[in-house]
Image (cartoon, rainbow, N blue to C red; front, side, top):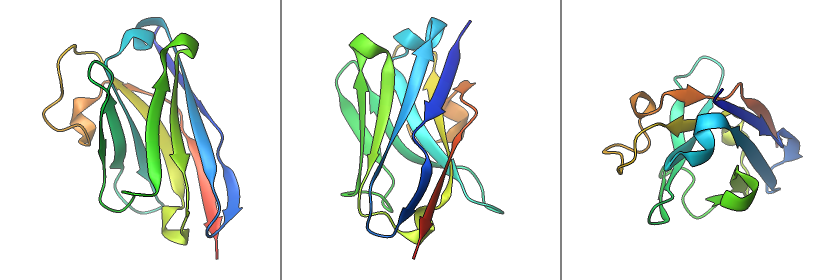
Length: 127
């Protein structure tokens, strides 16, 4: 059974760092396209970062470029999101997602590209 389980969320002061982890199992362990999304209260879920593991290509939303880094450890079947220089506007529920296709996605930060989702981990950044 395909499963994505996020961890690593918490509360941090502005300027601080957190590292989110997403443990994959079943089909998602072989997924070539994976991403992180976030959803703040009252807002739409938005793509934050994505990785195409075949080439190592990464994609980021403009709002997090230079501050967040997505990576994957295939040996541990785990996806990571390193978040530095956190801002209050980064406060949201963060979700791990996987795409079941083998080729590169056309829109790697688009929600419709993904068909497996985790339950989310909450990140709160205080000023």
